[in-house]
Length: 532
Ligand code: HXC
Image: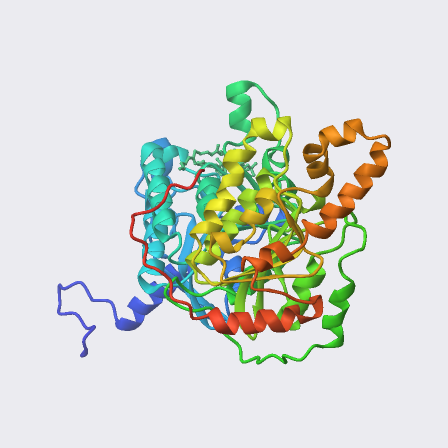
């Protein structure tokens, strides 16, 4: 016998290259299966995909390169030594979305409930570090019971390390989380630190501790749905920025969201060649009738938002939460913009705690990633009242002031109707550093609305009047005509122009052309101290 694989008498025969390759294929197949067949069936029966199925649907076809597939845990307590599955409950790697690189990690609920231990943690941290090093977005597909109980403090350490990576990456690379199962503890807190969280109807839950643990500690009986189902998270507590109909809808949302974002804070978002027509169109003219004659009548601010954006395409974030303010992304002349707009259809567009926090976070995201801000204003002011004051409307409302004042991206503001009091100041006013401020002739800029102002300023005259109601009507008319108009602000240059509504789209395009490349200052401090 001749050849490399032949053995001398008494020698153990070496394996051939082909045998080595077969061994690799066998190991790869084993590593690619995740949990047991029964666990995979259970996952499917609950209407949830497996980690690898999810990655395949999220990324460009065939683009995923998995790393660390052979990693196994080293835990020996609780009989863990007997079950050392390849991958250790998380699938990580890199791939592309619309041909742009992304890093992904997908928790595998079929292995130890997707819980994070040491080896799992090492994989995720390595992926995060790769994303930071290469400046590409990181997407976490979460489906996990949080820190792995069997691994004790080591599991906690890795979640804390992950949180540190989330913070280090914040404002440097976009971080997007999908919640695609019952996500507890660290599997909820780490996503909460990321920029956008997406949930899917019926299968997604997000909470600090699970029902079993709550029952054993407090005796309280509850369900994952009650603790933080998709609807609650998207509309009540704001944990979720989007509630998808199902997993595929969630993946679609993430892909579209990424199309508006740069890969990192030193890059620009993808830009499409879409030079705009600056002449006024019939659709532009429809804006002339948008604001109702009656001051207290609501209208849909989104009609204006759609009209100024390319093809009317607008991707709202936090659509179901704090609906009195609208935030989202669109494009003007093919380039991304962030929209913040009061929505008169809800709470008359007034700012409450949730709206202030929602918009502040959005403004800060756009600022961190160099996305210009367009602000549309119709705001009767900050909401007040005993409960709101007790809940901290001052402290929370200040977040939005801070965010706008801090933002150095191009800022363009259009006052459509009311801009009263703090609402005027905060919503992208010139005084907070906006670059271009426009107003419609219907704009009403004043410390407060006519009713309140007249009651305070003319209290005595009204008390003494023979016909107080007649006098009130006259005083209100005077205030509306002379005070609550855009012209006192325009006289001082607080507004750059008062424009007819139909000119809004072309004016915004010209303004963006003028300020898109504005110079932004280098921050001279470690960071400010936003009123959290
Ligand atoms: C180890 C876990 C686990 C965990 C679930 N499993 N959570 N294993 N550590 N944290 C395992 C279960 O033992 C089970 O294994 C499998 O995953 C599926 O779990 P089930 O309970 O059967 O599934 P389900 O009924 O869908 O309930 C899912 C759940 C529940 C709601 C997530 O498992 C749960 O409440 N787990 C604990 C959640 C929790 O309180 N985590 C907080 C950790 S503290 P078998 O072998 O039976 O299939 C934390 C702090 C981090 O994370 C610090 C952040 C800064």
